Each structure stands twice: as C-alpha cells, then as structure tokens.
Image (cartoon, rainbow, N blue to C red; front, side, top):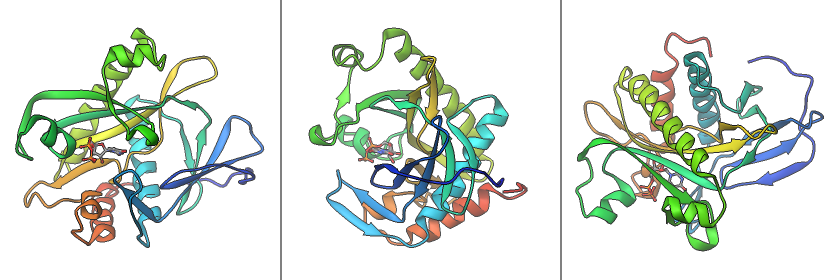
Length: 244
Ligand code: UDP
C-alpha cells in the first residue's frame, strides 16, 4: 500500500458491491468496496459488515500475485482498507466464467450433481445485462451484439484459462479448491484487453480442501451464515508470508 496524491472526486458509477470515483488523473479510477451483498439479480440484499474490507484485501492480493506471474490487470494500488486505485478501462459487458467443478447454474443446466469434476476447465460467456437476467451467450450471440471480435473472444478464452491455471494452483496451496469464478475484462485506450473488476470470494466459488465447506458468496446465496468469517479465513490463508 502506497500513499497517493490522488483522491476520489465525482462518483462515476455505483454497482452492487463497489463505488467508482473519478480522480484528477483521467486514466485512473478510485474504487471503494461496499459491505453490501446482493444475489439473484438484486432480489436478495443484505449488508455484511467487514465484507468490503476483505474483498478489497483479497482482490488486491490476487491482482498483485497475477502481476508477479506476468498477467497484468487494471489494478494499480490499494490505498486504504476499502479502497484501491485502478486504471480506467471500458468494461466489456461480458461475464467470463471459468469452471473446474460443477456448481450453481451449470448443475441446473446439465442436471449434474454439484461437486463433479469436469474433464477439463470450460469457459462460458454471460451478457452483463440486468434487464435480461445475464443470459448465457454463444460466440455467435457475442458477434451479433457486437460485444467482441472473434480474435478478442479467443483472447478472452485463452486469458481466462491462463488465469484459471494460476489461481487453481494458488488456492490449492492454501487448501482451497477453486470450483469456478467470474472475470471481467476492459478495453484500454489503445484497444488492447486487460483483466479488470475484482477477484474475490464474491466472484469465485472456493471450497475448503478438507471439509468441502463453502468459503464464498454461496454462504449468502444459500443462507448458510458465516460469510464474513469465511472470507476472513480465505484472507488469513492467502496472505500468510505476504507483506500485505
Ligand atoms: N458469478 C459472479 N457474478 C455473477 C454471476 C456469477 O461473480 O453475476 C460467479 C459466481 O460467484 C460463480 C461463477 O461466477 O463463482 C459461476 O456462477 P453461476 O453461473 O453458477 O451462477 P450462480 O449460481 O452464482 O447464480
């Protein structure tokens, strides 16, 4: 964490879990993580004290680890317990989901048991559109909607699988199974794509390696309780030996 001469000014956008502020630098945004939790397209809502801090810490740590591994993201620096600076990008309205194990909507779609390992990781694209309920898209749909070119879709798929390789190992070392997760990418001013948004237990399914206990947002979606405690445990394991 470094000091910065920048400070948040106008609120640019407020999402379900974060606020984005402009700064004096037009290329840099100030992100504030909220304690709010939502699910089922905003129908379920709660405020879980401490979630924002933990997601900020976890996401910053993962972006730093990815950068050390050679995978860049929009992340610049964490500036407080609940805030980070990121490069301003134009978010592509696609949720890029990678899955290693059956869970959630894939269990429903295929009629398969949760917990079944996939023979290889798969990548899915969902349209970030609340009015439509974030539908699954084929590559033809993405082309029709003009959301990304064929070359960009290839890049998104390959980038997501590479991130999955890294994250699967990173979490496995701390006895967490990475079941699935969602990524978002943005376009930089030169047109190139870069990883953006957040990577946290709000956007990943993480199961304890020994007990299979859910350590992610499913604790909220499924009314299991103990969400903040689970996120705290993920953070405790993640930053052991790190100077966060
Ligand atoms: N996910 C997310 N935001 C969304 C939808 C899904 O971060 O708006 C994540 C979710 O946490 C999980 C993965 O993407 O790790 C796959 O989610 P799924 O399609 O199974 O949907 P869900 O069952 O979460 O509604």
